Image (cartoon, rainbow, N blue to C red; front, side, top):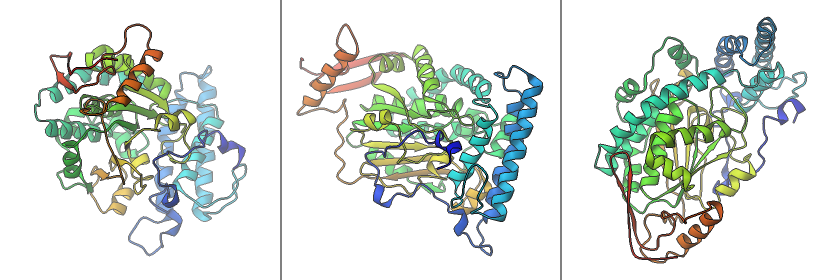
Length: 435
């Protein structure tokens, strides 16, 4: 791999639950689409990415880390020209040997990696940071209302459905898609309005009923959620979903990018943001303190993900995971849509590119809710122990090693533990047992 692209693939390990033998991270193979096909052809896909160049250029020119505004504007212009030139070359020859980048079959990974390499090559490490910070602040103000909407629903299934609809609504905040970038620029696409006005079911891929059916069974022991964008996406979508999983008795690991890309949240940013959410909501606050919910770096540096190139930290955290959730159009549709796992998996995203809508034969802003059962999946949640509870004693000992002071009542339970959400607080009904 050319040196310019190596730092964009810092992770090297596969997700333990991934069926590597059948794995192809790409959903759409650009070079295999015939010119006379009804589907978008190679030139259509290249043009799709060229359309995003003005957004990148505009944000780069305003990069707050730049010491000289004029120099930043000149660098932004160089990025735009360089990346556009590369895209034009690939449109003419998908196998073009690009100076400094080599030659390989055209794929979404190549196109996106080239864009990030050109961007960072001009010194633009994270020009989306001001936008992310601003959107995180706005979303945090809305979080109490979103959580109250969920907690006001007594039916567990209906509560989960609303949380999932929140994931789709939050996923609108995507500056990598020109349509939603324009919505953001015009101040459109509010969370509550989007959640209320989601396209009607059935969705593009609609396994919601299967998800709700599985929800009524034993809770999963541990879920790993590969998150996407900052702002409403993670704060009002994925974190409330994680909270529902925790209330159901499931440990949660949030996996985010190691390196900034677009308006995607990074692991470092998410660790701070999750603590901020914990200051707003007592349940989340306690979950953070007791490490019932944690954050790891996925090892990725792109707005898409190859699940065979993860960080050691992510792979270690995934060892006992029995639910994998992949979210976002780039991670769950354009890549990994057909990935198979030994455990249960859920792919969640909103369709924001017309070309992707054509491939899926669906509407713009349609939803993907793809649920697949794993083979031989024995799910035991920490809140659903009625028999042998040896694992929970082990968790208690491990937790004592991590958290100095008094052992956690969440993990020092041998009997059945049931969550009872109160008025913004937590009540924990504990069965008999001791360490």
